[in-house]
Length: 426
Image (cartoon, rainbow, N blue to C red; front, side, top):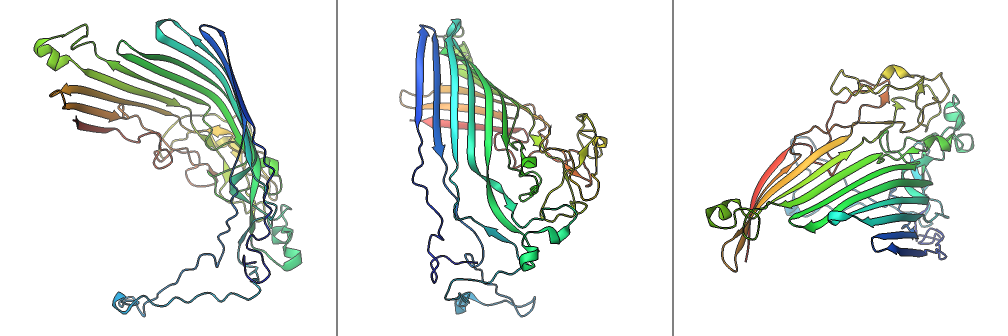
C-alpha cells in the first residue's frame, strides 16, 4: 500500500488528470403554427471523479478499554488520553497483508460523462389545456458505480482460491476490490396534459413510460458481482419504474366574494375562500434481483451466482408471511461449479398508489392581517406500500413480501398522516 506524499510517492498518487473533456450543448425550438411548437436538445455533462480510497491509515481510531466492565476507561477531568499515532514508514510503503481485503483505484481513472437528448412536440388545446409528448433519453459512459469489481476473484468456477489471479503469484486469497465504470442508458416516452390556472382551477398531469439499464446492483449486496462474465451484470437499473403517472390539481371552490355562490352575508364567511389540492401517484414496482443466498456451490470466491429459471415466472401478487408474491418453483439451483442462467433484475416488485389531499381556508382579518387555516392528509386512503419480496434463492421466506416501505422511498408516506396548521400573515 502506497501512502500519498510520503517518500518518493507523489501526493496525487500518479492519477492522470484529464484536460480535454469536451461538453457541447445545443437546443432548438421551432413554431409550426400559433398552437404548435417543436423542441429538441442535446448535451454532454461530465461527472466528478472519485479518487478516495478509505484504507488504513487514512482513518485512525483510538480505542479506550476499561480494566473491567465496572470501571471507566478514564475521566475527562484528567484530560483526553494522548493518541497513539500509526508508525508510517519513511518510504510510504506498507506491506500488504494477504489475509486483508483492499480497495484499489487505477491511476488512469476515467472521467464519466452523460449524453442527454430530448425531442418534444407541444400543442395548445381548447379550454386552457396544453398537451406535450416527448422522447427523453440519455447514455452514460464510464459511469462510476456503487459496486466494486474484484480483480482477485476466482475466474474459474470450481477452482476455489487457486482460481484467484493473485493466489499463484503471492498466495493472496483475500479480495482486491476495484471501483468499476460501466455504460448506462435510459429511454422514455413522456406525456403531459396541463391546464393553466383559470377560473379557480389548474391541472397538471404527467405520465412516463421508460426503461433504464445499467451494470450496478445494490439490492443483492454492495459487492455482489459476476467477475467472470461482465455482461451478466447488465440489467434493469435498481431504480427503474416502467410506468409513472402523477396528477395534481388546485381548485378554488366557487363561493365567496366575486364567485358564483355565497357572495355576501354569513354564507360568504362560512363557504367562501376555500381551496382544495390533490396529488395522485401511481408507479409500477422496482426491479427484483433473484440471487443465490450462498454461492458456495459455484466454488469461485469473489463472485455472485443466480439460480436457473425453468420457464415463465407467474406473478401471484400475494402479500404477507407465508404468501408467495411470485411462484418460486420456476427457479432451481444450478449444477455445482456452474453459473445459473437467470439474468439480473428480471422481475418487478409491488407498485405504489397514493393520494395526498389538502383543504385550506383563506381568512381576511384586517387590511394588513390575513390567516390561512390548512388541513392536510398524506396517503389519504392509507394504502399500504410494500417492499419487494425476499429475493435470496434458498433463503427463508424466498418470494414473500414481509415488510412495508420505510427508508427506501422519500417520495411517499408509508402511513396515513394528518395535520392541521394555522398561518398568520401580516
